[in-house]
Image (tube, helix red, strand yellow):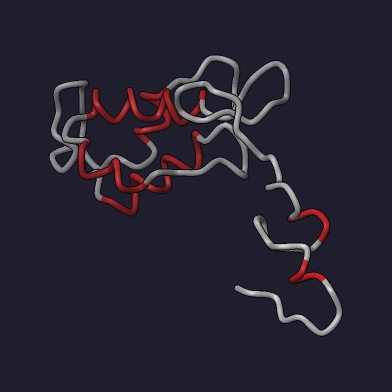
Length: 119
């Protein structure tokens, strides 16, 4: 991804008609598959999550640009920490006990030989 995102040029690769920010997506020839391809092109990195359910909320090219800017910014930060859409650091903590191979909240008796571990 380039430092300055040129969304008009990127969208033009997939549009089948001329458009401006007020053009409805279907009038620009942008259907769901082309919108997903656009999202993949613009995503901050290869592991970025794309919330395809937001596509139903998009009606114009201008709304698409806002969504694509958010997608490009999501997950990218100078500190290398994964972030959610709101910019909060993602929580990747392992529940207590899980790292030791037991279910969180399991009793010590469950770990004794001859005792079955409850699901």
